[in-house]
Image (tube, rainbow, N blue to C red; front, top):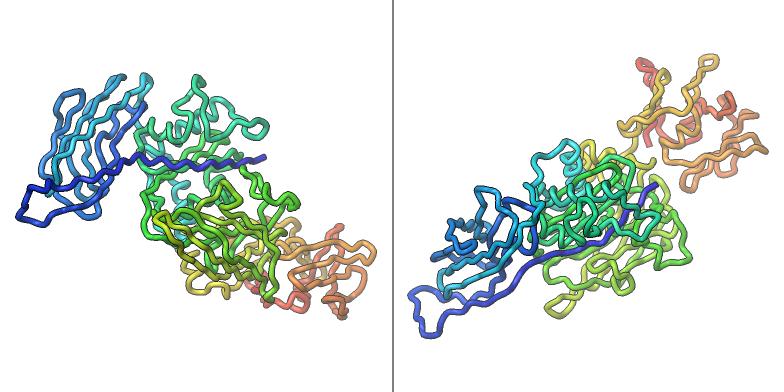
Length: 549
């Protein structure tokens, strides 16, 4: 049983100030009249014995530093200034003892009056060092997140030690206290003071504890799976997918403890407005359905809807000036141009959305089918006014569940290259070895549920293995002793009691009918090309049936 929960929190410690030149000054160089913000760190109570201490300045253009003086508890110390990041930074060379530390930074930017910044922070009694080292599992988690970023055309992210520490400590807290978010109202995003492993009640408290002062968000999954599988489940759940889609996400931390999987996201302040959609344009392996297990529940706004529904589609607009989005137009059409009935969630009605909208078919999508999506959003800007963003794109659903994520994680570069070069026109290839116990679909191996059968020189394949490989459904018609194979608008009836088959009700004679062997319907290889309309080849040297569709 799985539950995924989300409550994104954004933590930005910044104070904006304006420093203007004194009117009596007549400088011999250009006068700067720039507003800039700054964020000083750390703040509050932190759990690190050697925290980074300093100030990050947000300048609209580079301005040289004329001088600086830095003090902790009235002791003057050397501090560096990184002009690339506009950051004053001091790194302690020894562990800080528990207690309160008073910080004072005096500095002057070229063309400005001197500034004095003062603040304090507290080192907790149980403070420790940042997480040391990165496990192979964490590396795979980072790679999986970057696979999705590549698919969406977004920059890769990197590890941040403080975020890794926050993820580790929160996962350990959840595991130590066996937090049950399924049968109780306890959130996987909160901690209770006094319980083992506690470092902060909220995400903001925990980021502060590890000394991280950037914008932050968090995904948590409770799932009996690998970390990568948990990340897949988070991406497939729309509210949890949002952080993956943000262009200004720069760094992450990930950690698994037992069945608890935690991902911490770190953000910059954002740039110009940018629209991102998911599924990605021309993605040939989009899941067909979504079965819920997410909190908040996307269907809470649609009381008449039931799971499973179609795979959730999302569109978001991100940027420092974006306040909220709303839907002007949205549609989804199948390959014949028929409109698909949609369920929509947008910020005006969904208090867990701000920058994104969710739209999903009220029924699962068809496997191995092409769909066309259209969305037009009205974007309200914090500076006033609105902008309209629009996107039209197509995608193709996967023929069998899970193959898309598996191929993406095996080689995201090749996946993206094939998407760009071939798009929706690329074909699927299935290989059945007559002497094997597995078949492959697009080079991904699957176990056969029934081994191939050979009778009087004729080779037979199990119809349910064929259907799984070809993106079809199979049912049994006991009255006619026939297997009913359905894919899109095509229905094939394979009779097992006479030498015939039917396509959409029209019957055809065949010298190679289906056979009922050991209570399972087996299809002769020579009948496949006749009935399925697919390209079927037989490689005699390897005794392999190759189906291309």
